Length: 140
Image (cartoon, rainbow, N blue to C red; front, side, top):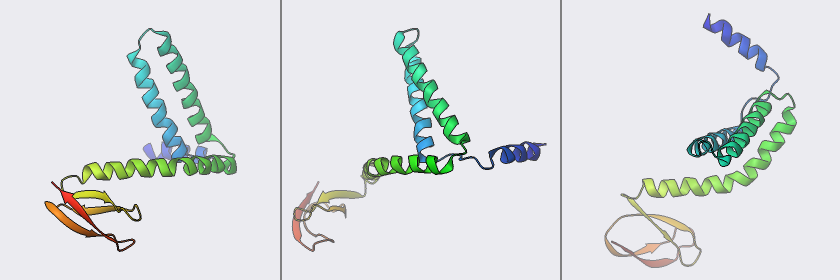
């Protein structure tokens, strides 16, 4: 029975665009706006946020079911050009917080490269892997 539903959905989705990174971003934006709208119950702000969330949901559904694949791919490419540097920054910040017990990050004063250094308490001389310059670093 379940495989029949699955095959029906697969046949329906043939030739349609499906999901991509832009759809994922729009979906999470929809969820955040929807939750924030729940906090303002009965207020005009709640109605505006509900309208915006509904519009975003419609756009996600439209992009998922669209048959104009080259246009959806071009939209996704433009989004990725904007999002990749921003997402990379957030990823690096997450890694810094995750590794805070084992590593410290310092910038090379000469080439401004970010160096991940193991924690060894006290003052040390560090050699930059990119420009081979040496500088002093202090770790608590």
